[in-house]
Length: 84
Image 1: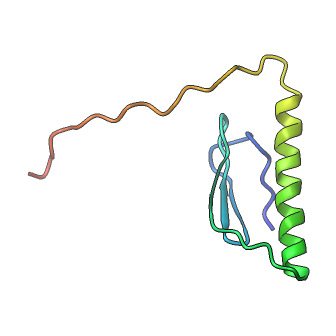
Image 2 (image 1 turned 90 degrees about the vertical axis):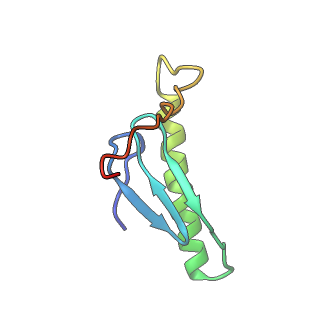
Image 3 (image 1 turned 60 degrees about the vertical axis):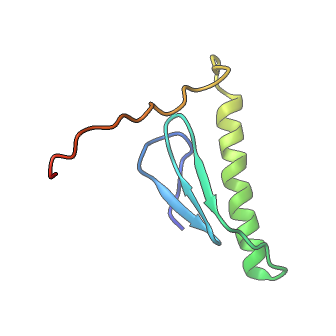
């Protein structure tokens, strides 16, 4: 599996089971569907997800000046269709 270092860049992305985890410098996005199966694959996926979340929590806990909240995404604006 590709290594993802939480909050290190805006490019890394990994999959664990049916989840996609996308890295960012101010947020990590997790989306998809995840079935934790009662088998060796389920155990491996659960351990991988736990390791990633443990690393993210450790990173956040180690920040001295952690803000109360990160700014939300910029509002989108409508622009004229250049092809129309």
